[in-house]
Length: 577
Image (tube, rainbow, N blue to C red; front, top):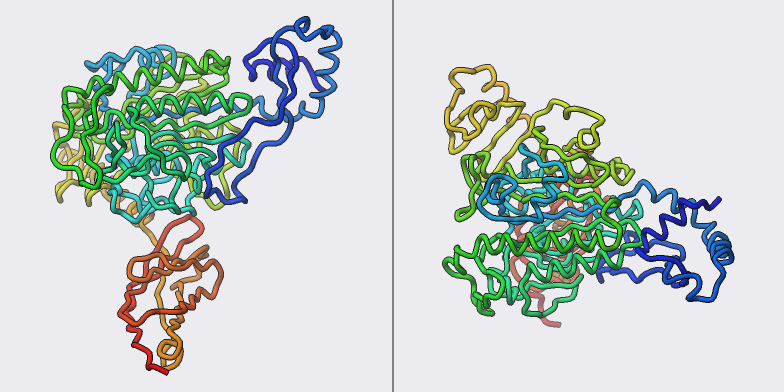
């Protein structure tokens, strides 16, 4: 039965007054490459209430009776969605722990500070990598980035990325009935097969690589990198301004249904360009030297802060603020001229300054203002958001994070005890409670972060038991997250197929009974074929004469990839006639 609460909710979602206008469901943005089976569109009729009953010449009693009759079939849907808040994740790029005023920094950020005052300001929140790609992979999958072989930042020339086997927040929330969008920086692979539309996002606007010119949007190789879904676009507009504009547009279009919006600002990542500056990169020319002016760094942060304010004002104007959970965070620590004070280290390092980041959660009426000192990590966002959305973790998806929703809602005082780990550039670190062990350049150090937040005093010799325990834990963790399915490649031998027809028959052979979901065949480092069922055989027709190096990449149910040793073959020239 349709009740007043349902009607009120529809009125509130519409952000309007009384009156009736019937219209089809709002248009939704779908990327060109989104597979049909993942493009789960919402159904039903939108009821938009505008104006007053008198202005439409309809008696109020008739209006409400008609609205009740029309909306009765939607009551179950409205009730089901009542527990699905909108979710907005706003990520800064290379913002330091000590940069902004809400964390004691020098750069005035009144809009971010307002979130901190009215929400939960975390003091011990961590990225799961000290650089962009791994931290973003962890944020979206709830898993250590090493499980996806994304432990390092991807360059503009890299052919790697977040494989479609990995399950993202976009995938799970889309299946739960959310509209999903990302505006801004992706940095999880620039090839089409790694695009956001293949990772559960209905809408994408922004750039695929790790950095671009803020104005002409050229990547580090001098190539254009500015997209709307899968379509390249050209517009000379300051990227922070454009990202804000598109975030607002997405919210406005999706305001009548639950949505997940990932706003990945570029700021304050280099090049150091402030609003109003011209471009610093030239088409076709790779970047060179330091670009822009480091004095622009605070101006870039403040431009982002204004963008945060605009997004929040949009939620308020549409009466969505109390229906929306917002998380603001940085993807990793800062380089100079940014500051990570009082922490040691910078972006790219496993000291606290490389991965402890500012983070603020905001949900008025649901989250009480406070300062939270629990040790939280980006991998925790995945289970937290699923809890918000009443969504379930897919069975095949192993999540490394813990939900911090019970702590945010005041249902629990603390998170369960656990260990956290980091790995980058051959160095590793582990955290358990107040203890942090780092192994950098072959040297081991233990720090008590409660007494020594700046990691200045190595106490490993004083506490050998703790040092040994954390060191052993790192070794076990490394073996776990880097385990890969073993696979080999064999070729059909003997005269015949290769010489007679230019056909090469290749078979990938998993080395164990581990469940394999897909095998990719790569010829001279070019992805040539996919095989999804056993036997994993690829009949390569029309192979031109020449030498080839062939390898296979096998993926298990967790999305972890194993790579075979390459096999060299020579296809001879075929005799005339």
